[in-house]
Length: 91
Image 1 (cartoon, rainbow, N blue to C red):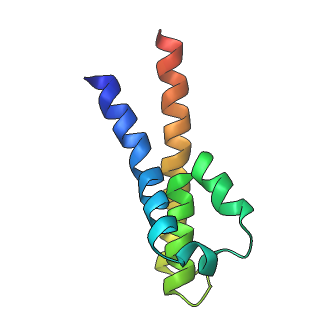
Image 2 (cartoon, rainbow, N blue to C red; image 1 turned 90 degrees about the horizontal axis):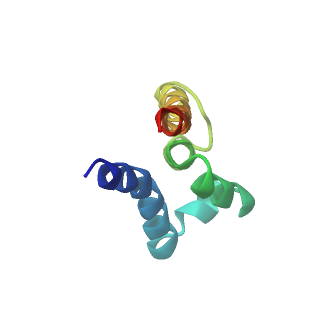
């Protein structure tokens, strides 16, 4: 059961990014190239979603609340990487 929760938790932001890509043009409007969304999908999904929200809602500027949200997303992504590393050490 615990492994299932981890898989769902890691898949949700990527699933959301997939549906955003499939149903809207937000990724094209939020990023100048296609490389950053692809790398974000693989390595930093929460940070990519926070950056996308900031770019679309704050006139392509990272300031104020959106900067705080972006930093929190970076910390969550780092926590996901660190948490999985710590779990693999325990085995």
